[in-house]
Length: 348
Image (cartoon, rainbow, N blue to C red):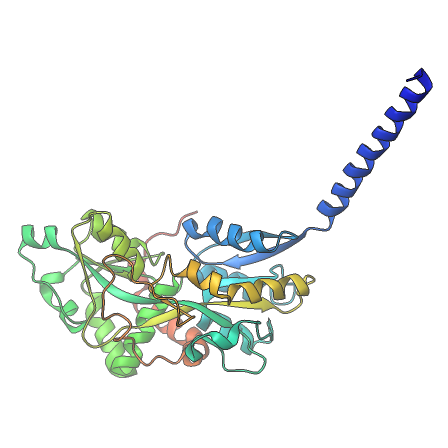
């Protein structure tokens, strides 16, 4: 091969390499970044992101995550200048509230028809579609109870007994979705007047209101508190790890909520947002939800994690998610006025 031919071949190969780099740059440049607001547990962030991106390689998820109350407040504060594209994993009552404020882009995902009716907004098009449901349960430390000769409660009414003075922690409903579903459940089951009277009595036994739905059962699992009113799956997980706790499903019934997916009105990435909404309601996504929750939107997914209370779904109260959304501000204002003095300090 002549020197000229060698130089020409090198030039051609160099041009091809540059073209390949340019093409890869174009592909990379066209990857759509979706800003997704969520309140799912931290350990779920990476599996959810990987699952979606594996099926949608041209779209990248950028999470913004905090507790339900904080994320709800953030979204509402950004109403006139939205920064999120999609909500994936926020309480349906919060999303319903935003839908009523005109903040949600109506869209019925491709897989919505296969889901349980209770897991849909009921609008046409849908404003949100549910993912999984979570319940309020009582995490009771049996080792502490034996040591201090404390009886095991079987009902919400039992928790106001004097022997539980300063022994109970529960989530602050203004910052925790689990906290809000808990008190909304009490108001539904007992009626408003009796519900507030119950909370007045319970307040005497509450040591602290925490800013997380998981923390009460974690504290009970560690023996830091006798009783934690909290998130069902966290309690089951702690028991499976070997914590000396029983998960008690109070006989009066349980407050509950569901996590939902919705598209934020005003997104500049609507096509990509619709792809995420489609995937979030798919069978594959529901199978992923089933790794973390016992109750999911797709009825064909059967999930019963170890130590999950068998009668949890049966005792779900007849809670109206729209009522929870419409009355959220009123209920939280009343709760804060009465009980906020025992709230844990907020992390700075």
